[in-house]
Amino acid sequence: MSDGGADRKIWLVAGEDSGDQLGAKLMRGLVTLSDRPIRFGGVGGEAMAAQGFASLFSIDDVAVMGYLPVAARLRTLLRRIRQTVRDVVAARPDVLVIIDSPGFTHAVASRVRKQMPQLPIVDYVSPSVWAWRPWRAAKMRPFIDHVLALLPFEPDAHRRLGGPACTYVGHPLIERLSELRPDAREALAREASPPTLVILPGSRRSEVERLMPVFGATLARLTERLGPIEAVLPAVTRHRALIERLALAWDAPVRLVHGEAAKHTAFRRARAALAASGTVTLELALAGVPMVVAYKVSRIEEAVARRLIQVPTIVLPNLILGQNAMPEFIQAECTAARLAAAIEPLLDGGAARDTQVDALSRIDGLMRLPGNEEPSLSAARIVLDAKRAA
Image (cartoon, rainbow, N blue to C red; front, side, top):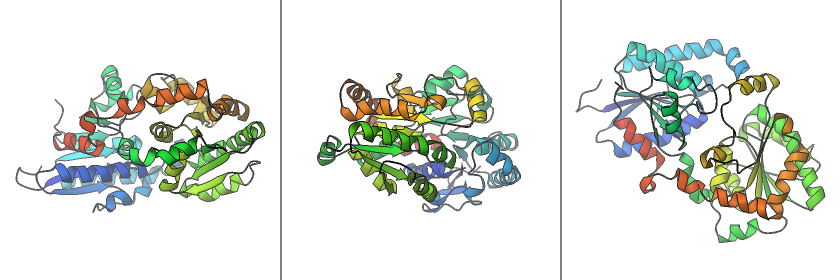
């Protein structure tokens, strides 16, 4: 450990792009609040590198999800876990912050704890213990001292399940409200004709492959019933070619856009959205866009999920609100007929749309931090004060 007059040493370990983005913001927050210089180390990606971070290895080596992809790269993952543990132990930092990707980062943290039992370890992003495999909360306590939660209901979940100390530090999306909210001209565009429907088939290849055909059929049904619709599909860059190819098979026209700025422009003009379940539903909620949510997984994943999922909804805004305000259609229920029937009243206007808009208006109050503090600064305060749990 460093002494009181030396530079702080903070090691960050991220395992995928979303964690890299969080890590970069956390680095900025730590530098802003620290009373002395900070030396960073560990594992990160391009966003952290832009803040001066030198990663131990490419984050792409460990950015894998799903049973089969993990099994295929297990040897590499185990090697990178051992390498990361050796690096942390050799560096002897003041605190270790693991960021999301629990399959990788928890393996690192548990091994580090055995070799450095007094090192404070902070977990930035709670695993979804409130949704499935709730026993993971208690299993984290031996090697996690504090969890930084992105969702306001997560601290209560950890208390209920016997997990580590947990504090809601705010979701990074609340720092981007100006990018998500329409101005006066865009608000008028939401009511214009033809209506704009934003379509979001997911960020993973498996999601795109399963949802693009049914989303295309849904759009075709809607145009048959309602007439022209301005359909906009923000395509994930790494799956751009796949999305373009699948969109060619659609019977109704759709305009593909690329990049975060174009996506948020679409959100600010959208009357409604058809979206895969995931963080994008929270973006839509903060943008005030009524939505219908869909999801499909493989039969094996479905069988596992049915046994393990503990919540009445998989839609993040619904969980935050404590009510199923946004309809969701999962697996066999995810059909073009059902999706079109749910979206139509959101485009037409009326009670269904008004109910969603009212619910979405409450999201802000539930997610903002006291004094409107930025999440990255809230997280940085806890990291700088991190102590080994008793």
